[in-house]
Length: 308
Image 1 (cartoon, rainbow, N blue to C red):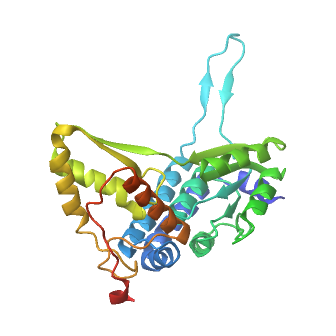
Image 2: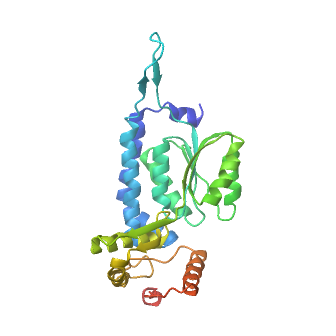
Image 3: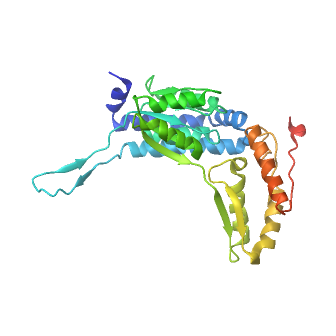
């Protein structure tokens, strides 16, 4: 019996038990998992613990959903017929996850799929995926149900192989729109179903009647989470004239409270950017707006030498 057939015959209650055990193991090993995240991704260790908790919450949620995957009765035009719908596992799922939330995106996708899966983590964060796979195995998932393919410089080749494989029944991807377009083309020949979560270009808007403190804290959360490296990060902040000066002053004061440095230091509230190209992009954006007439109100320099 193939793995996909064997897991298809696994009861909903057993699936739920495995997911709950996996969730419990995430929380039990939260400090170790957070350290792995910080070393690979750069985010502050306190924020990394938050991601582990976030990741565990998906498993807990889908454990409950697994036992309540109800079908429905559809009214038929012919009264002599009865139409029933039921939910069944789709088959082997390919899971392509990004580097910004490498553990949470795995648990969300795998928990939702409920199927035998092949994970392809980002080249920057392979250990985060491998650590989660070990915990899933400890939770009781059968050998071969969870598979991890790591690669540093052949991501395109691995992605194409997964897209074109006729063993794949679903491909779930979180990442850029440019890569998404490529995956759609590659999945066309096998008609592999796609689940896509793409990047955004979010705008944060502040009106005159806002509560200033609430707006500032919301802006900080929207902009600084994971060092600004999220698909929902605020890329533009538009402020109405009447509150512009007071909002700007309060925001600058709040930004001064950020402690930037090595993520492993407990006192840090923001770690470094994940890779060099992100640094270059940030420098380009700053220079671009300065050339367009903008002024820099605050520069925060990381004190890496103090905590190295």
